[in-house]
Length: 175
Image (cartoon, rainbow, N blue to C red):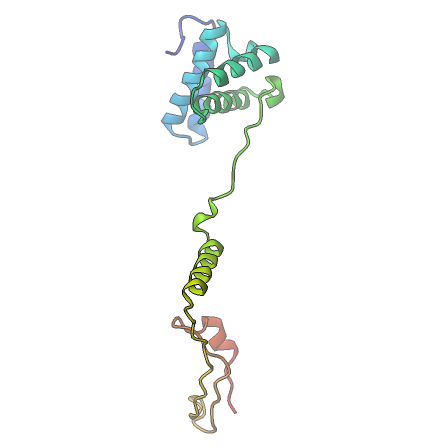
């Protein structure tokens, strides 16, 4: 689908594009996907994508959005990202083609977050009237392991994992 013989200068552009992607350590699949979308654009207009103006790019991207029947818009995104990568490799600024920014949804689903699980557990426990036992500080009277004299009093109680490693070194007490 790459129009090497149909659009003048596309073969050279594609070689530079492949070289730049390879140098930056991207996978061959990245080159395949991006070049496929750039080639489709070059075939559509019959010229190199770097020779297009802002209105042509916007019309083409609008057509891609309208053509898509799914909310994924993967084809649209690959086209925009491929154009950005190509512009970067050719030393042109992103503003050369006035490409749109694509919003990223950085939020993870809250369904499995710790706060959600804790809230659900507490609601379920209160609904079932389950009482959680409270941790009581154990008072152990024993001799100090360092000096073998005196009586040790427990100041803090830790869970099954025990105290943090630094805690043991910083907080040794002898009474």
